[in-house]
Length: 118
Image 1 (cartoon, rainbow, N blue to C red):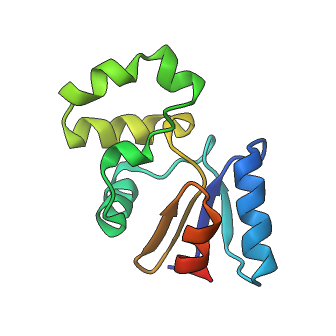
Image 2 (spheres, rainbow, N blue to C red):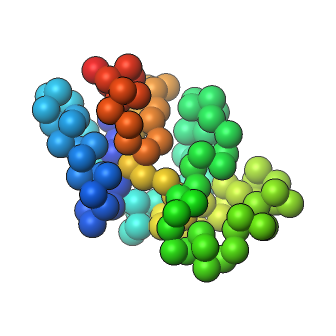
Image 3 (tube, rainbow, N blue to C red):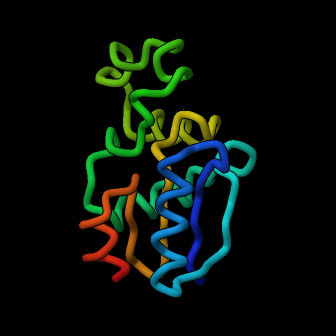
């Protein structure tokens, strides 16, 4: 599959993550998450591979999340509905997502990147 980095160029956290990866000599396919979000099948695979709760994939501090009042709506939704919602709008997805052969990170925390990608 090869390393994929779903990110948004105007996101400072994404720029920091890309800089960190580049500093380690790690390169991959950089994908704009707002124009080409992962589809539902890809998201399900990422979710399963991450061991995280699906809520970790939501950009809870983003405008779209707040506008859609998802904090109140998510608890009543099925996992399938949540995956479809994430796939429908890349701005709802926490970024960056870095994925490669069963390894995945959501967001950027240097110690987590060091553990997974270092």
